[in-house]
Image (cartoon, rainbow, N blue to C red; front, side, top):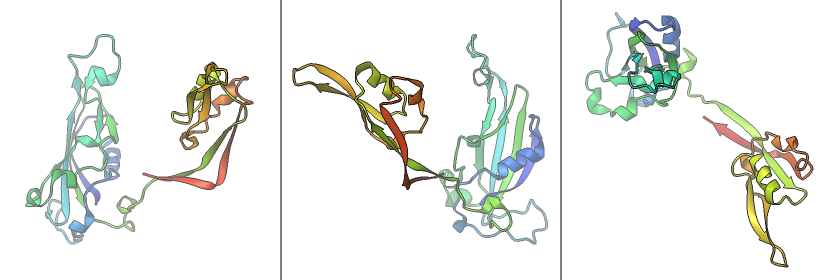
Length: 233
């Protein structure tokens, strides 16, 4: 399911109508396409919709000045109300008996933090959208795809002991969770703190360690060439 038709009632924002409609068409929907039928191609008018093949959504947002904004703030989020329009502002409008068959969380937007556009006081967006079932051959927005990425597993080895203040500095050079500082004790009872590799998987390979002369020769950073970490969104 994807947004196919956009009926713009009012758009006084800086974004053009056709650009806005294109962005809305790429917003992922949570609706299960198996519960709907394909929209027939022989419809006489675009206003002829059925609760078996169409979902209707509404977007109505107005930007205004925030009278309770902090005096020292210059951030648009503080100075204005609804300065940014997100996908969470899109509301489902049931057609026919859809309110009886579905719940709002089943038909709503998949991600609520997708930025659609930015507005300033006096701007308003009011429109309706029709979502239908389709296939990727007609448009890529109907394809069930996702962003995929991969990286090699980092390998971090401490060549020399790193203790006390240098251990804290070493820990700050890596991503959180990579290095830990543990307390140790010598045979004579003297306590000290020493850095250890806790989980190299969290490392982002920033190589900040090479900024410090006292640490760059204490650590060996590499990647395991046959260990891949895949991520799908």
